[in-house]
Amino acid sequence: MGAPGELIEGFRRFRARHFSENDAIYRHLVTDGQSPDVLIVACCDSRVDPAIVLDCAPGDLFVIRNVANLVPPAEDRAGHHGTTAALEYGVRILHVKHIIVLGHAQCGGIRTLLTTQGADNPNSFIDDWMRLAEPARQEVERTLPDAPPAIRMRACEQHAVGVSLQNLMTFPWIRERVEDGSLTLHGWYFDIENGQLLGYNDTAHGFEKL
Image 1 (cartoon, rainbow, N blue to C red):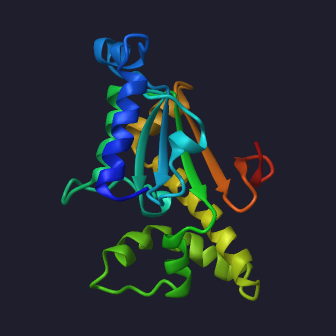
Image 2 (cartoon, rainbow, N blue to C red; image 1 turned 90 degrees about the vertical axis):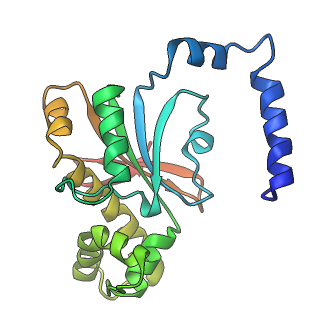
């Protein structure tokens, strides 16, 4: 699927399924508004749609998608901060109870970061964005300098999830809620090759099957 005509046909099937007299999901969402408990920061990779991967219904998730599922640290208000604005809306307006950073295998953004060795191309928006994950690349270079590319890639993808979790705590309105117990942060990793979902375990300092 991908051509506009196919997408329109898909919308017609969606409409028939969710806007029939017997389907109350959207009537409820229109009347009562959205109230998701979970905010997910996911990659814009077309293979990693959180609602599909996690088999969720409309209204279940508040989703932020960007290249490599990265969260920038708290910064001044100069410029445009789409990811930060969405985080603020989810936390301060919707009062979500969980934030999940969902990394994944075969991430193109992480591959770019590793293959360019962190080099900055001033004409590339991708390079500028991926500098957020530079601590993850440096950790891989420090601990796995001679490992096979696939091992380095997976390690960098998972370390990048950790970088985003650390950056989330730089926002006062996130830190306060984490510390008072009203908000919990999670680091997850979708292993596309093996069809597995892994979660970061603070105690073991690594990812394990969920």
